[in-house]
Image 1 (cartoon, rainbow, N blue to C red):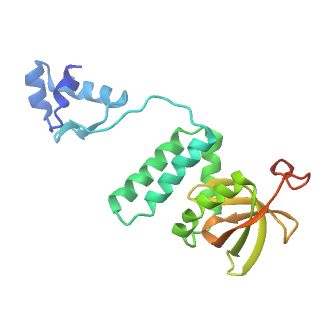
Image 2 (image 1 turned 180 degrees about the vertical axis):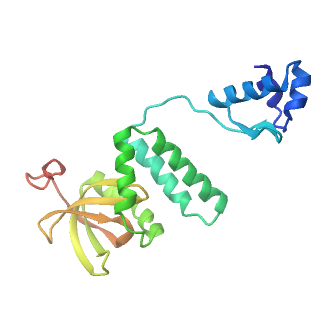
Image 3 (image 1 turned 135 degrees about the horizontal axis):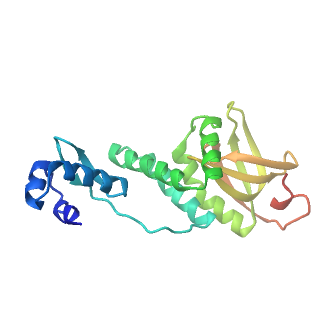
Amino acid sequence: MDLIAVLRDGETHRACDLAVRLGVSQRTIYRDMDRLVASGVPIRGTRGDGYRVLKQTTLPPMTLTPSELDVLTLGIAIVSETADPDLKAAALSLADKIEAALPVETVAEADSWKLALTPLADPARGLSHLVSLRGAITGKQKLRLRYASPQGQVSTRTVRPLRLESWGRVWILIAWCELRSDFREFRTDLIQEATPLPELFVDEPGKRLSDRT
């Protein structure tokens, strides 16, 4: 605690100076620094160069709902597309910390998504559709999608939007496609247009999200 009190000023302190100030040996300083780092205190430095405490905010453990995790992922995805290199680096670092804190099975799925997904076609466009897609899902409103497949084939579909899922940095719209008479997944970054139609839909057997296998 005495070490932490000294380091709180944010300055870099050499082990020899700390030893004199606290009346202990440098070896004791080295040992106690290792113990503080191991216990999670954000200390940067090495023997010979000095030590300082990094400015960090520690959050208490919390439980997120799937929707709250989606919101957090969306915010990170938006910031990660910024031109500011510092913000982009911070967003990617935060994403890594969140993935590390998620349950093991979720981390494994996240890793597989990274390997399976192709690079985003237009991340900004994909993010711009999310508000209208969510609104259509909530209001059970049919959509007319102009969609370009990963191979570049463009088609127009009328769909019943059912759910949005985030796969790493990619958002997927799960919908019942009236053209194919089946469930389909649409990458939001490949949606060129998403036009709400005046026609609403009701849950029908075989076309509900719970019927998707």
